[in-house]
Image (cartoon, rainbow, N blue to C red):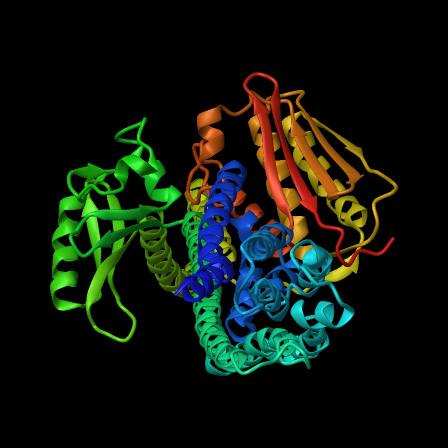
Amino acid sequence: MDAVKEMVLQALIAGLPAFLFPLIYEKYSLIRRTGSTGSIGSTGSIGSTGSIGSIGSIGSIGNTGSIGSIGSTVNTENTESAGLSSSYGAGFTAACALSMLLCVLFSGKPWHGIPLELGNMPLIALMLYGRLWGGLILGVIHVSLFPLYTDNLTFTGWLTDTGVLIYPLIIGLSGRFIKLNRRNKIRMMTALFAAGQIITLTSALQPGNMDGDHVPSVIGAAVLIITAAALLSSMYVYFVEKTIERVRLTEQITRLSHECAREAGKLQQIMDAAPLNIIIIDHQGSIVSVNDTFLQLYRNEVPSATRDDLIGIRLSGECGGFNIDVIASRVKRTIEHNEKSTELLQFQDKVFFTSTSPITTNGTEEVCGVVIIVQDITELETLRMELNHVERLSLVGQMAAGITHEIRNPMAVVRGFLQLMREKSPNDLDHYYRIVMEELDRANSIINDFLALAQNRIVTKELCSLHRIIEELTPLLWADANLRGQSIEIIMDERVPLLYLNAKEVKQLILNLARNGMEAMGDKGLLMLNTKLESEGVQLFVSDTGSGISAMQREKLFAPFYTTKMKGTGLGLPLCLSIMERHGGKITVHSEEGTGTTFIAVFPLNGSSS
């Protein structure tokens, strides 16, 4: 009975690492979780945990079943995880060392001198589970301690009782062991455990040590050793494999949670980058998430609001100029009927495009939430209305252009007959004919300007000199100036290159601007025409010394039919603007009341020739 007790004690001590390894795992897992949580909190960035995704390689642990492989596998992927995982192996090595020393300490010979010491069992388990060098070191220690607890030290006993003979076999089978399934691992470990212990029985079978009384003891010891080997193998494989599987599952859960957090962070960034108000609602109608655009809109009502203040509340009230209660009713309908809806809502002077879309779980039609998108399209609606207005005006302009074109023909006939009647009428009626013909000419001029403004034709441009056009107009401009008692000053920049221009339209532009300047000045006024080459293009300055134009008048200056003259048509400057736009240029005005006005026409250099 005492022999059985000693056998049970040795078996419990030999199986101690199998019980301690799960506790070691729990301890170091807690330390790792605490450390990783602190590091994530300190970084404050989900993206910085991207290296955690490399832990996916730990999935191979379940197949290899190697404690040492935990450290080696993770070491190539994540330095932090590698250090902690090696701690698992170090803890297992320490447990095996403690078990070995206790087995040596409580060793004995309960069966007529047959030694009982199971210290090589934890060493075998350690070497099989990948801690080969640690097992060999402990094996050397185990062999070195053998003389301390043996009574009859012989070389043969040293080889048989310490199990050194089986170490080469363990080294050769360790690589194959980690690839086996659990059942085959139990079989191989049982065979090696039993072989290592049965070899110790050979000392009892040596000549001179064997008698009739020893045979039952040897058989009983062999049966107990094989039974203990089977039990210990099952314990080691079960607890170690279960712990390694927990390592794998824990790391997979950690990896998936980090991936979910990282993807959630990306989704939030995408939502924040969208120029739309985005709100995510759960199936109970409470806010789950909002983007920055909606948060800024909400802060118009509650300036101190944060994103956390909105999470969990229900949609209600007004926000940014629209009534959320209207959207809340549609959210309820979307959740109940699983349907997407869009609607244009108008509140006061603003127009909003709203959309509610259900969020369903994968593979089912169950609605778990709703995405609400709200866009302020007030400006777009205003532009659309203005575009429709412009299209209607364009149609009216085309109709008016056709009508005015037809009016010119009868006017030409009327003017011709008036000239004939004037020649045959008395001289005292001559001034009446002159007034009628002047008014006809004025009406014809208005019609010509209107047609030129209304026409949207492609201008034929040729390479010509802007200075040559000005020189051709100079005699006509001086003639008008002399009649008004005014003078003209022309300064031309010699660096101005040839430009692609429509000479006829440019002449009309210069004449309109020059005559406007003359009409704005009194006697002794000075009209200045200057050209200048700049990086943006060729500038044509037309300046006068008149009374200037007020700021209110400058805002409407290029509007059709707006004029400050008694007999003006309001089409001259709009025609000038149309000419510059067809030439790809621009026209601006600078004026101060009491100092004069300067019109600046800029012709682009594209296609010019130096």
